[in-house]
Image (cartoon, rainbow, N blue to C red; front, side):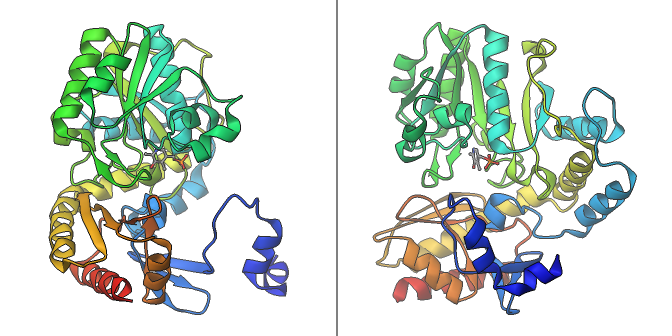
Amino acid sequence: MTDVMTRAPISEIEDAHTSGAYFKRPLTLVRGQGSTVWDDTGQSYIDATSGQGVALLGHCHPDVAAAIAEQAETFVTCPEIFYNGHRAGLYMLLSSVLPVELNRFFLCNSGAEANEGALKVATLLTGRSQIVATKRAFHGRTMGALAMTWNPKYREPFENWTSRAVSHVAYNDLDAAAEAITDETAAVVVEVVQGEGGVYIADMDYLRGLRRLCDERGALLVIDEIQTGLGRTGRWFAFEHAGIVPDVITLGKGLAGGVPMGAVCWRDSLGTLPQGTHGSTFGGNPLACASAMATISALCNEHLPERSAELGQWLLDELRALDHPQIREVRGLGLMVGIELRGRVTPVLKSLQDRGVLALPAGFNVLRLLPPLVITKAELEQVITAVRESLDE
Ligand SMILES: *Cc1c(COP(=O)(O)O)cnc(C)c1O
């Protein structure tokens, strides 16, 4: 094994075998701790991607590492046909941070899978089949989730496979939604902050309007909290900013501290899924549940949603104060920040990397910062300096 790994540079081996689906950066990462990751030459980077929104607690949080290690030695796999204490524990913890109404769960293994699950919940529990989603939305890349994702570049090659039951309406346009939601609509699916789509924030009145329309017409309001959930936007869940309670939410990314996990959470009053209508071999396994319990407990104990609100506002203020000619707009909620540039983002990402900062794009001209919620102000200052210097280039 190690022999294979040392025979050629890692990047060459990967390139020889990779699917080709990913745009790769020429960087081999070997280790992470807190907000820092290291490459194979020993160079360190501030990870303002959180490993694509996952490392809310930073990398290798000691509580999560301990929970995984302990669980690995006790019990890793236990399908949902059996009961398990870690699954029960996770249900209780999730219930404690969610509104009381949202206490039914389907556990799965990724964000896209959670959205597939939400489609089943909506279809089965309303007896309807149409879905209203929004333009610029990103809900994942499996066929059901892909049908709700907006970007035609992702969707169109698979048109024969994706559902025609989805209509896309303009984001933040309540009139457009009012026109699209009918007696046939099972669910309206929306992000509170469109992450991949460019870090666009919903008007809170828009979300309250969607809540009202869904109530009037018997459709479910499904909020995709895969990127925004668990403290990222400065609240436990981004829908809290609007003071509404959705019917269904989906979680993924940081839920289990880096171990793959997704969850569909819905109102108990909607009922449960008929037996046999859904399932997952790995769903709700004790390893992921133990890791998720440690993650949620640490988010609570370290008051990270509050920290995300404070640091996020400070970061927004500092970035706006740069008043840089290359910046068109700075948007964000908590530690989910988008910097819309006048030019392309790719060269800026490269130059940030040269300065020891990893960041994400969101579309072709938006620089997206999703730092771990444990990031320090000093580290964020380094990020801000690197952004300024990269834009000056
Ligand atoms: C990342 C993401 C997904 C997809 O999650 P995967 O785990 O990559 O399948 C879905 N919705 C939103 C809002 C996301 O940010």
